[in-house]
Image 1: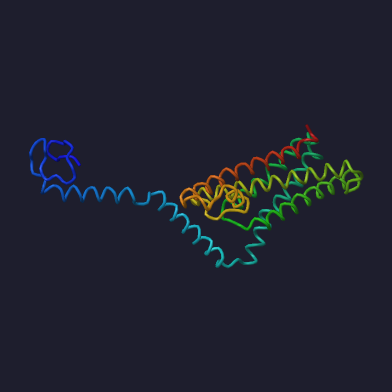
Image 2: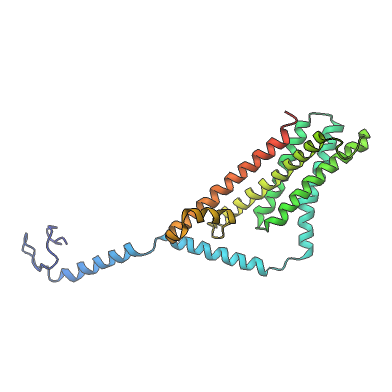
Length: 259
């Protein structure tokens, strides 16, 4: 320790400073107490750990609230109408306007078909969390029904068959439907990430992909804080990477035949 008078270093057991010859008897208990308090402060958990714990409890509370929250049939029907039937109708309207009313480039229709489902899915998942699997299945239904609906409109006006007549046409139909589906999936991912960032959730509940990655890195050997930070990074960057991938697939499958 240091002498409180001259600041020179003295031995722990000394009662008199060898430099200034001052008595240290009264100061030693105070210095020992200060040293003990400094040690306790250093050993105390960091503020970030408390914040992570609060976020975890908030997340669990939200999960419990959602489980016990009554979900009425009317609410489910309204979401289906708002986030499936309306984009479906808008896609058919865009097809009719671009292909037959204005007779302009098909590129515009493909761009709308990629942007519109993504916006609706983003708005849906940004408001509050949903179960992903039913909406992924719904994205496939939206994509297939939209392509068939556009083909039906074309058949009414041009008097051509509704369904494709050869393998090349089937392939183009499938790629167009995949473009719409990937667009909706991108909206789901972006909306979920936006909701999580707004509510400061730090990835307490991880998806199976994250659990698999954590298994490879040996999570049992990591500290709770290190594991928490790793989970957070994998969730954040993993969601961003998947969103970019689905966006790229949507653009590729949607525009490869019109560019």
